[in-house]
Length: 450
Image 1: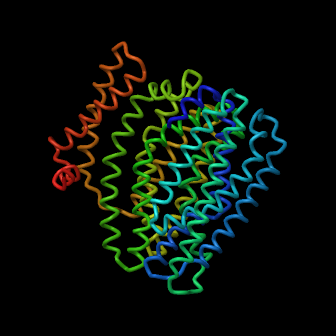
Image 2 (image 1 turned 90 degrees about the vertical axis):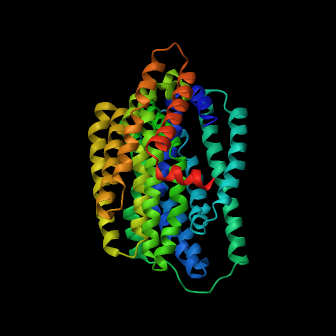
Image 3 (image 1 turned 60 degrees about the vertical axis):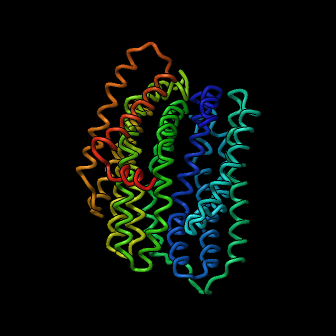
């Protein structure tokens, strides 16, 4: 968030788009080639942890397969695209992606998530991002430095993998549990693969197809919109990350009632946060782009407006799918796999139709439709308990943001001041109405606990 406004103004849409294409495509390769080992690994590690069973064999098997499969996926992509004639900057960055893929597979972030050791990634990320920030400011001085920027990203991933590997090795040796030959089950892994591939696949897929069918500039515009939208996902996705291993633990012990209660409570918190965020993105898309990206990225404004509902859609879908896959109900897992497979197929078809017509805006339209479709599918399949009266009050409260925006838009203010004033005023009114008028149960609960 600190360096992004600097990078957009130095690199511009084309070169930043080249980096984003390779970055997102490596993510797509990792998601598809590793057959959902990260999601399945977190689920299994959390299970074994709750049952007091040693997980070293599972860790070694999943990490080894992850490295081999992801590198094979990279090699296939490299062979298929090495002669692509429409790229001016992408070919220079693709070779670095091999190291990125290897380090990402080795890092085994899923092991720490399954162990619920969120403190390790938090401390590690703080230190590495500080180093990355210093490196970006010191080394990125002109558009031609876009390769250096991707090297900084890749080296950061390598250092992250080193820290994770050392900690995991120490954890396995220091805390031996009941020995077992427990490894992974291919059938269960496949169901996880089909079911969870959409979580990281949809954005990656949009950018990859955009790069194949459009230009590096269009990649940059769409990537900029996706980056700004995903800034808002940090808090709701952090909540999902914390509760997902708990779902596995509760289901492994047969405590399905506790898992269901946790799901219902998590949904209420996500909607409380994500609905106002989505409305603010719709209203302040122009100000966001001018503040964070500059005049070269004004083509992202409409893309952000199309994608404004995605913070809500992705947060709920992510939560629901982990709940569904952690359950012992195989029927739900099969339904999730069929639904997600169908959704990904529709997404590819929509992209091939919309991107040639509208470029980055077409990819944004596809993202909106697909993410909304996934959310609706998971809600209908899993049927969580939702307090619709409270959700309606939340939506009504967000209508108060509109007159604030109209007033500020008519004033002679800079984009930064309008963004800050609008965000702060909307947030204060939202909290006031929810607490004083609607007596929102969670705000009231927090107030009592304080």
